[in-house]
Length: 72
Image 1 (tube, one colour):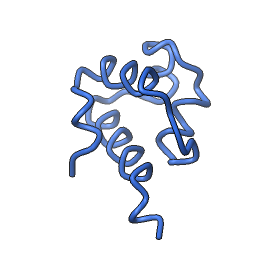
Image 2 (cartoon, helix red, strand yellow):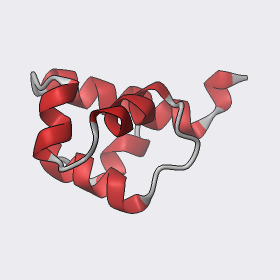
Image 3 (cartoon, one colour):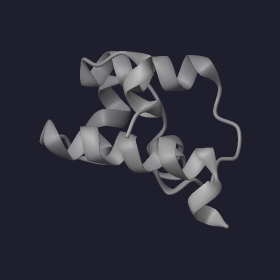
Image 4 (spheres, rainbow, N blue to C red):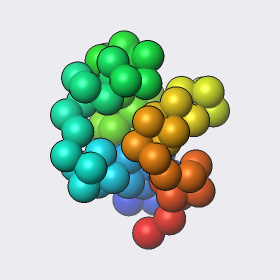
């Protein structure tokens, strides 16, 4: 069931993009001006409804477009 959860897909893609950039969660949270907990819960899919603002802060910090987190 979790494989069909779009949030799991978003979190998985964010984690992959972050790791490809060589950025730790703590560093990403600081660069994106978000709490560490926010970054962790979004990546884990534990936050069922992250705001578009949160997702935009993360993707901007990673240097990717918002559409990148919905791919793959």
